[in-house]
Image 1 (cartoon, rainbow, N blue to C red):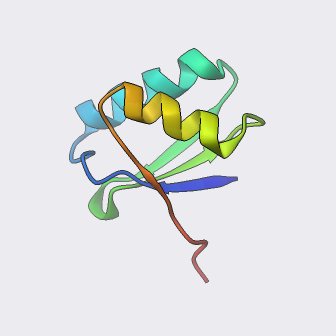
Image 2 (spheres, helix red, strand yellow; image 1 turned 120 degrees about the vertical axis):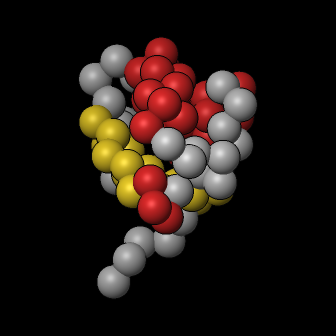
Image 3 (cartoon, rainbow, N blue to C red; image 1 turned 180 degrees about the horizontal axis):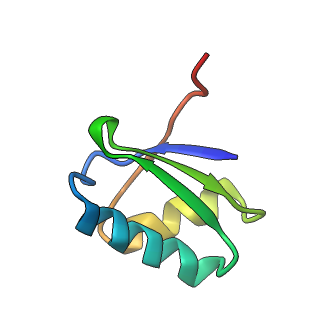
Length: 69
């Protein structure tokens, strides 16, 4: 699972745009959001770099986030 911090994702509309961007790359993706902390959790076989590029191209640049625990 990939974890990303998406500083520009502040609402459910932003999350919808983020989801759409990643689904374009991987239609089978599973995504969960933590809007309060502006994090997403992405279950995809695509490389992290590809997912980050898709987010940046959609206007939501992101950074890898460390696993919690």
